Structures are given as C-alpha cells and as structure tokens.
Amino acid sequence: MLVQIEKRSQSYQDSRSQLLDHTYAKTWANVRPMFAHVYVENRCHLKCEHCYEAEDTHPHVEGLSLEQYSDILDQLARLGVLVCTFSGGEPFLRKDFLDIVAQARQKRFAVRIYTSGTPINEQKADRIAALQVSEVHISLYSHDPAVHDKFTGTKGSWAKSVRALRLLKERGVHTVLKANVMTFNVDHLDELVALAKDCGADYALDPTVKPRMNGDTKPLQFAVPPAELKDKVYKRPEFAKATSMTEADNLCHGENPRGDKGTLCAAARGLVTVWADGQVAPCAMFPVAGGSALEHPIEDIWTRSPLFDRVRKTTFGEMSSCSSCDVRQGCSPCMAYGLIEHDDEKACNSYSRQDATSKKLVADELLRVQKKFQKGAPLPLVGDIDVDLAELSEGRLFTEVG
Image 1 (cartoon, helix red, strand yellow):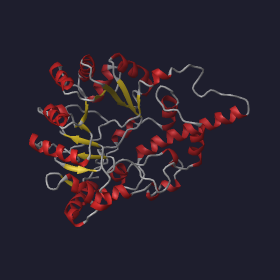
Image 2 (cartoon, one colour):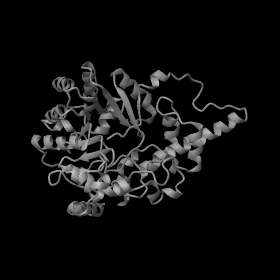
Image 3 (cartoon, one colour):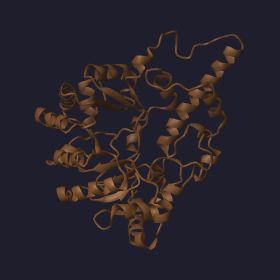
Image 4 (cartoon, one colour):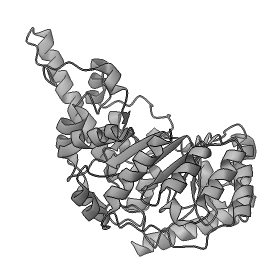
C-alpha cells in the first residue's frame, strides 16, 4: 500500500516537472470547469469509521493564507468556475474559514459547504446566512444519536449536527442531510429521511462506500451487498430514480449508453479540485495532482498537465475490464479509485461495481415483471401503494457523499 502511495507521489512529481514540456493548451482551450472543490483543511475532529481520508494521503499541512486563497479564487474565476464547494477534513477547524467563504462570495461564486455541522453555533449560522451560501451539506449517519456517535467516535456529535441543521433552517439557509447507505442504517432510511424533513432539510443518499485513498479497504466492511441495496434502496420509489423497461432491457444485454468512445465523468472537464496545500487535481477523489497552484497558474495546470490530458482522453472502451463486464451498462467506472485500489486508472474498482451490480439486479427483476405483464399476469414490483410525486421531489437522490 505504501509502495503504491510512493509511486503515485513520484508520478505527481514527474507530471509537475513535465508540465511546461507538454503543451495541450490548444487542445483543451475551450474545456472549462463550472465547479471547483476546494479543500481548506485536512484535519477532522471526528473519527468516522468509513472516512476515505488518511494521514498518509491527506497529512496535516500549514494552511494557505487568505491572500493565497484570494489569488486562487481569482484564478478559478478566470478559468470559468461558477460554483465553489468548500470542504475538509472539517473546514470549520480553520478559524478563518468563513473569511475564505466571504472572499468567494465577494468574487460572485455560488458557494456550497460540506461539513459535519458540529462546529456551527448561532454566530456561525448568522454569518453563513448573511453570506448567502447556496447550500450547506451536513453529514449524519443515523436517526439514533447513540449509533451516530459510536460511528463518528465522538459523543454528542449527533446533537451538534442536528442543532446545525435547525439553526441554518431557522435562518433560511438551504441545508442537505447527507449519508452513505451502510450496513447499520440501511434498515432505518425512513427514520433518517423523517429526521431530515423534521429539520427542514433535503436529503442525499450515497449507496456506496469507498476504500480509503491510501488503498485501505477497511471501510468496505460497511458496504451493503448489492442484493440488499436492490431491495431496500433501488426498489423504493422514495429513494431510487424510476428506470424504464427499455433501460432495463439494455442493462441486461450489457450495453452502455456512453459507447466505447464516451468519456467517463466530469473529472478534468466540468470540475477541478484544489487541495489544502495548493495542489490541483482532476477531481476531489483523485489521489495524485497535476501541479501546484503555488508554482504554476491553475490555467496552465488545467490546459497543460499530462495528468489532466490523460484523464480527459480516457474513454469507456479503454477501461481494462469494462468490455467484458456483465454489469457495464449501469456502471460509472471511476479512474480515481482504479488508481487507488489497483494503481491503475483503467482498472475496475469495488464501489463502482457494487453500485452497478445493484442496478443490474433491479433491471433483471424489472424484465421479469415486464414478461409477466405481457403474459397477462401483472406482478407489482414495489407493492400496491400510491406514490406522491410531489413528495418524491423533495429528496436529493444519490449524490457523492464525502
């Protein structure tokens, strides 16, 4: 594992040293990111058992100055970024965090904050509201305080997170309760959603659990098996997007709507990430960077980095095992986690396959239902219940949860 980290670090050093030797500026001049993910702090006072960060991949570093963040934000604006998401670690462990947010708002960025919410008191909530932050996402993993606090390793964290949701709601700030679907909460999603509604928050559920960015797979002990995800998440109309029978048929035949020439994701295309030490990466999950904003203009890294060029050019058909995969139609292969798990950007990764397998199982069942309908023997998939579509629209479904 440490050997892989050292190899990635060397790869980053090589990319950085080659930055000015490889010019892709003309090729990528018109590709501009709308979103930036900006880490302001690697530390976190919570000890969540599934956290993808680790000291060897996100070591504590002396934070950038306000002047350096002002310059970085100016560069992101020139690059075309409209939305800045700030996170950590726990971003509020940085005492002047809201001063950084104030800079972003002065430069007319829309701002989202990802936080545990535990440091948010009335004074911070007042300032967040005054700054007109677009969204605050607060991680909460159970409706049960004892279960949540055990998972975060911090007594009282549930109460503080819920307090933050309520304080922000009282001030008119749009809040989102977000959680990974895990073994200990998958049977209590209704209660978790009810808590979100009681706090006046939207909710976001991520059905996957990821390895740590140093390759440690220990967090995967909390991953819900695909068959269970199928029954308890994807078949629930409150939680899962509807899948048409046509899509189900394609899923079962192993085709992918991207086609072999389709790009994989928004990494290095629609989004860019700046780490807490100023390094610039293709996305928030990528374990290596393409250069440092303290050494090169971000636009040069964006247009001229070999790493960014490689990520942009990778297509679905180039992934090493996707062509023969039985769940390829519903899969979103992740180059970052291919690199993390197998030291190969084009390799399969466990969390993408887990999610794709769950969708394939749903598709298989939908096709069986379709055949029964065609034979005149209807078999409801979810049950004889009425679904309130207006109520369904309240939930924010299946976004990446950090």
